Amino acid sequence: MGQYANQPDFGTIAVAVTASNTIDNTTNIDSSCLFIGTGGDVKVILSGVNGAGGTGRPTAAQAVVFKGLPAGSFLPVIVDYVLATGTTAADLIAVK
Image (cartoon, rainbow, N blue to C red):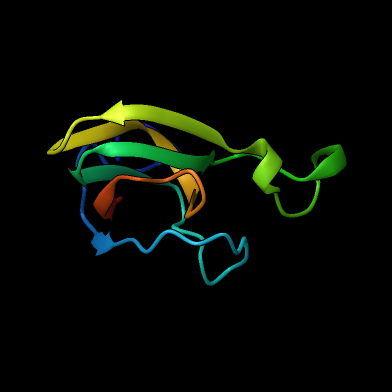
């Protein structure tokens, strides 16, 4: 969504997100912004974050927590992973 990596100016795909502490291809939400259905904190790994030395898969240590997000709002960053530990918000939707 927006002007990130040739994405259109509006969302064209939306899918429910299940937060997970597993960081692999099955949990990657592929450069999406998040809609917060039920407010709380969201712990994410931003898109473009690489593992040690700039290569490989990122780690949970590279995650950031956005605190106190209100229900019915968008998180205005592009993320690849939503971690379960540290996330209290619910009804998350990935939009791209």
